[in-house]
Image (cartoon, rainbow, N blue to C red):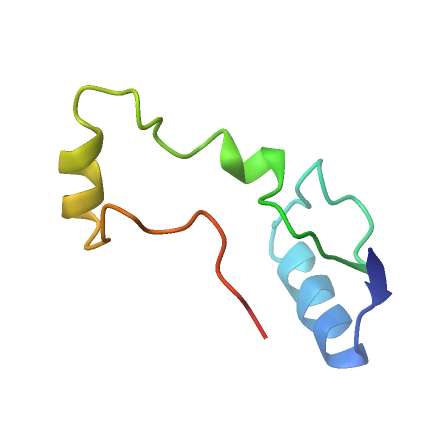
Length: 75
């Protein structure tokens, strides 16, 4: 689902781009707000796999609970 962004958000994006920020390839249109019920693959692949031998240590170091979710609600 995509929703138009506010003028303030677009101004912040334009300011960031003028300072060298590059848009993420998975989200190329700054005029849209990308929403999903699942974590976007671009971010999901950056999370450590629970199959890793050191997974529980990583979760603990991040201050997360073992049963934490991949998705958080951002309003």
